[in-house]
Structure formats: structure tokens, C-alpha cells
Amino acid sequence: MELENLTLTKQPLRTLHFFLMALLQYLKRLATYILSKSGLFVLLLVLVVAPGIFLVVSDGLHKKHVQEFINYAKFVLWWVSLGVASSIGLGSGLHTFVLYLGPHIALFTIKAVQCGRIDLKMAPYDTIQLKAGPSWLDKKCSEFGPPVYPASAYSVRIPVFDLLPQIQLEAVLWGIGTALGELPPYFISRAARLSGSESKAVKELDAASSKEDGRVASTLNRTKRWLLSHSQHLNFFSILILASVPNPLFDLAGIMCGQFGVPFWEFFFATLIGKAIIKTHIQTLFIVSLCNNQLLYLVEKELIWIFGHIPGFSATLPSVIAKLHAAKDKYLSPPPAVSSSSQMKDKQWNFSFTFVWNSIVWLVLLNFFIKIITSTAQDYLKKQQDMEMELVSDSKTN
Image (cartoon, rainbow, N blue to C red; front, side):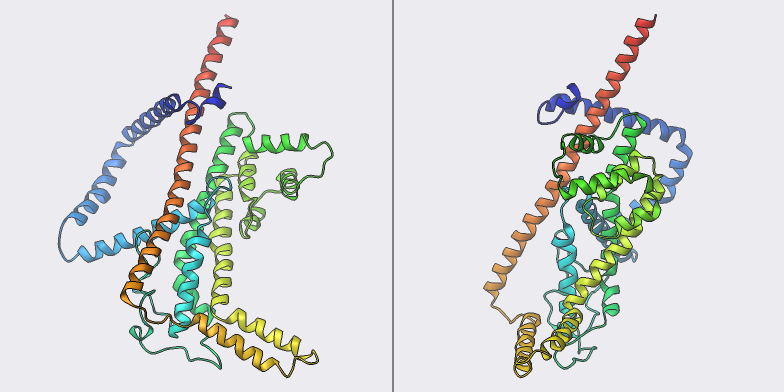
């Protein structure tokens, strides 16, 4: 009961006190480790940190290369952080693919189709970021040059695998972030196993199973119990399959991998390949195909073939197809020029929208940090309780 009541909402001062005590312990261990490896850290400081600081603060011909490196570092940190925010928090993560990566891929594909060329970016890091949008989004197609890809009968269709490399890097970085976000459930469950207890998620699932008393369980709970009962089959390939598809139960898979002793590198590499390579490319190719007219073209061909065999539809089919193409071209056409006052209003609205969603991302991260503080404080208190119990048992035996 004392552990359960130790939260920031019920006992904020006591929770923060235990968290700071645990943090001091970790810092003491870190200092001890650094002192034991002092030669290695001094060498790292001399060879990496000091030259890096000198390059940043000094002026010269290297300044533009340093700025380029900083731009790439911000780009990597941004997309990896969005991936972490998407998968962290045991299902409470923010769906940053829907909010950021998906719209970015769609906007780039639509812009490339409008302009008939794919060389829109100034650099690989020319993407949506925290306080800046991509430079190519508001440019006119004439600023990029004449179209490289010719238009077909109705519109431009750029090969999917020509477009993919242009947005592949940020998609893979986002996927790496989602793989990293799956690690906390694994580590928490593994720590529970090493301490001789059962993870909280497994306990809750067992409790839910025992309380059903023959009632019809939900599909999600039945799937969870099936996954728990087949935990002996968890290996590299089964984890890879679970990570390669949109799967709301992957948090449970990570918990079971930690609970049943699946090696870390086996779990992490299977998760990394599944999420950063396979799943990310499936999602990216789908959005590119949809916005690049490839998927619409295939659907259109099938509809023409189906309705062409229905009596009465054959005569009206050409006019219907023409109207559909007109609507699609209107949707994909570049926006008309607007006045400066309208542009200011749009920018103000876009800023407000971006600010709201960025605030949501930070709130999710804040919620995760609160969970870290609470769990760290509870872990410290549990260790203190265990030490007290050992002293009591020793006194009784003596």
C-alpha cells in the first residue's frame, strides 16, 4: 500500500524526495565508474569533446560545415524523437505518423506530381521540423525548373521508387525511434523478472482472466491471452512478424519478451528491422502510391472493367471518368495565388495548429517523465523496504 500511494499526485514531496535520493545513487555509481575508467574518458574528452567545442565557437572556413552537421543532427533528433513519442507509453503514445510523417510524405508526393520532378529539397534535412517547415512547400513549380517527368493522358505519374529515396531517410529515422520507444516495457518487465516478481501488465491480464467467470471476453483480451499462452514461441522471427505490421499488442509482446527472458539484442534487432525497415516502407509506399495516382489508376482500371460489363453503364462511363479526373486534377493542382493578408492569416493559423500539436507531443513526453519519476521513487522505496525486511529477519534468527 505504501508503494501504491507513492505517486506525484498523492505524495508529491515524498515522491520527489525518493526520486532525488535514487538519482544521487545513480550519479554516485556513474562517478565511480568514470573514475575507474578515467583514462578512457580523458582520451574521449581530448579527442572528441574539446575539438567539437572549438569548432563550434571559432570562426573560419569550417563554419558552414559545422552548421551543416548541426542541421543534420537536428533533423535526426527530430524524427527519432517523433518515433519515440509515437510508440512509448504502453499504448498512450502520440500517433506522430498521422500527425507529421504521413502528411510530410503526402505533401512531398503531391508537390512532386504537381511540378513533374523530384529534386525539390535543398538538402535531406529540408523537411517539417519543430519550428520550421520545408522550403519547397511554398515555392512555385517554375522555381524548380521545367518538368522532368512527362504527363500522361490525364496527369503526371512519377515512378514510386523514384520518389521513395526522397522521403526514405526521415521515414527510417522515425521507424528507428518507434523501435527505441518499445524498449521501456521490455526493460521494466525484465527488471520485474530479475527481482523475482511478475510484471504489472501480466498480473492485470491474469486478474482479468480469473474474473471473467465464463463471460464472453473482448476480442482484444482474447488475443492478449492467446499471445500470453504462446509466449514460448517468442523468438527473432515471431517478434519480427509482430513488429512488421501495425500492431496495438506489440507493447504486450515487449513485456512478455522481458518477462520470459528473451535476450535483449534478439528483441531489439527484430523490433528494429520490423519497424524501421519493413513496416515503415509499407506505410510509406502506400501513401506515395495513393498520392502519386498509381493506386488511383489501378482502382480506376478495375472499375472501368467492372462497370463496362454492366448494361446501361457503358455509355455513361466516359463522362463519369472525365468528371472524376477533373475533380482529382482540381485537388492536386497548385493553389491559386492569394493576397498578402490572406497569407498572413494562413500562416497564423498554421502556426497555431503546429503549436497545438507540438504542445501535445511535449505533454506526452512530460507524462512519460512523470512515470519515470514515480517508478524510480517506488523502486528506491522498495529497495529500502527489502533492506528493512532483511534486518528484521536477521534479528529474528539471531
